[in-house]
Length: 271
Length: 271
Image (cartoon, rainbow over all chains, first blue to last red; front, side, top):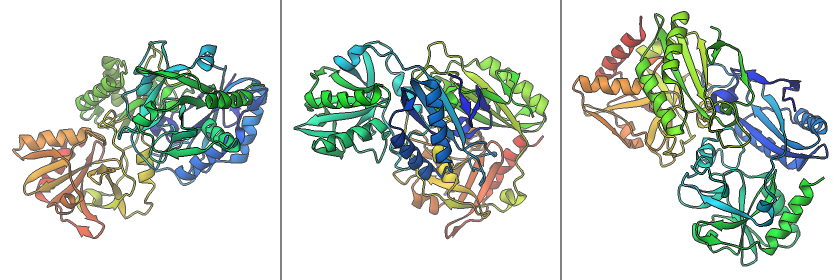
């Protein structure tokens, strides 16, 4: 579908945009089903938090309205919103009156093989480590070279995702997914106050698990704790939940809590 | 002056560019004097190193040729080259045949007050810390949110630059400059293997100092070592050398090696 820039059909953006110059902005990748953006409130909430932390003065009601109109026109697919700080003066300083720029891009749903959902995936052990930057941790900002480098570590069809650790060796997330473990009945996911992206599906599944009475723990995860987990799965806003069946020489079967939360994600993502 | 994209006059770039999506690219900021790009070989060398480390297949002879032609047409000013990985597929994986995109932007020389060169500058103590990422350290890549946040820490006219430390408290660089100290006759600048941008003027001044027989030391610098330095100055490819005259409650007079290297930089940057 034709992209929009600030509400107008467009295929290009001004060269002065700070998104290009510095990665000075945020994005959201939103599943669209039945003409509706899935988990819209959570996406808007994360975007607002990013705007607050980066000092971006976004027009949230306008963004909401555009996402709704664009989704209705698209019907089904993936809607990517990029919000930049707008045009740049020379240098890193932003103009006090800089107007953030809204970019909407629609694309078809990716056609992942059903086996990824059903049988689970093999996780590649990335050597690229996530750097620690509390000022940016959790945000879905446009500085994504670490993910680009990590994703370039494997080119085979055997691995659907890669595991990323931080510099201290803690287990954080996938390259484009969040990671969950189940250990002794507790649903665990990494603390993202130093690095990582706080995914919208991660937040949804945490709340859903709490509602089911499942104990939830958000804290540092060591490689040993990951390796000894009873269940391992990944999630994101587009594919929902992928069980992890293998990592290096380890293997897991798909566990009951994984299947339960996968069903919840699937219900959200299906029309 | 009119910008170029891939050698053609243009004001915009395709929304699919990975420079926008992920900051997936590099840039160079080059002073142009008398129709010539200053320190061109060093800029090209750093760009080539960045391409090697990020796996960007750039056409270096073509880039050189475009920089020369554009500079000749511009005459005087600042020439910014952005090199991105080109258009994106969905997701972080780059297409094997992705064509890097070359963006040239010309602007007038910034009009800094002469006092910055003559009397020196006051350095702002940024609280934003540089994160450690050896895979990106030294490169002038497009992921610059740390610099954007740091530059936003001060808005007064008293501070021309800000000092950035890394997460461990080591003294690294300015927001848009490299930092040098002179201590007991030794010219010192930070090791940039964990973070920081390895500036072209920094490299030039290091070589010039060596040629003058000045002992040079590139290693970690503590805040105490910085505070106790005999001379402190900043440099970059556009303004040359700015002596540092004040930082918090400390002050320095402009030292002899600072003046000597400033003269060398000025000679390079003047027609």
